[in-house]
Length: 99
Image 1 (cartoon, helix red, strand yellow):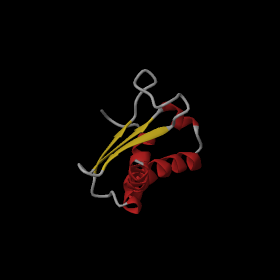
Image 2 (cartoon, rainbow, N blue to C red):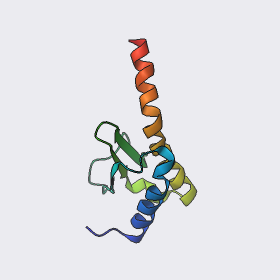
Image 3 (cartoon, rainbow, N blue to C red):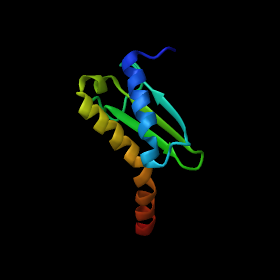
Image 4 (tube, rainbow, N blue to C red):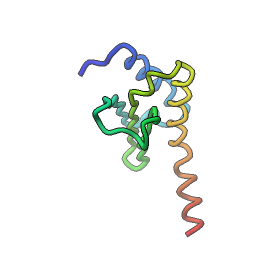
């Protein structure tokens, strides 16, 4: 399926910053679900991420509400999601310490 120009720009932005999170060599999938498809935790979720360090994959979903946000907020949302790639292991370690 051909991407819309705005989707291509977001994909390029993500590609350009992945090295900051040390996932530039991971297999990445960027999805743009429609309003009728599965959504995040709530209707306000602009984007989410599934990060798998074992299989070296990153899946980012960008939901329709994302396009209602300004460019700076869109960039912050993407960066926020990619931060989970770096903080996920720390969160797992903390949970393991509690158990």
